[in-house]
Length: 135
Image (cartoon, rainbow, N blue to C red; front, side, top):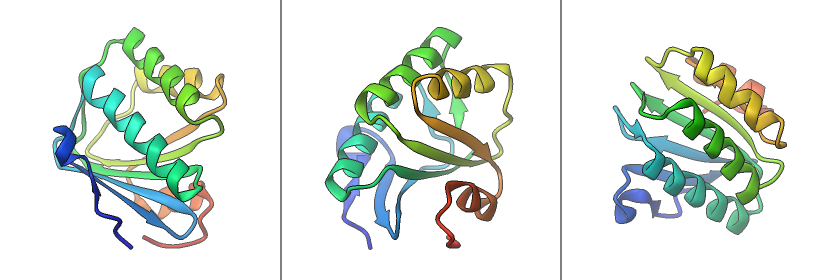
């Protein structure tokens, strides 16, 4: 079911769609994760999850580009926790290479009660998310 929630009206190129047990977030190919775009993404996720009574998110994208410093990554882990405590996010980003900053972000989020993991396989991301479903 597509609720028509689209970040394009906010200057973002993303789609939010509630599914059975989770929120599906589709990022446009080459999405750039900057401090500004990520603040809007976390806000959109929080609003859609609250509206649909969800706490699990599947973020799906190709060639996502991170344009964040380590401190900005830390700030966004804290923002996610402030906006929606208990959130679980599976990031299926094909073409994205995790690194030390990715691990730092995951740890900072986990320390604030938000679980985040990165995948390049959609079915593995859904299994980890605990949906019991395929995409």
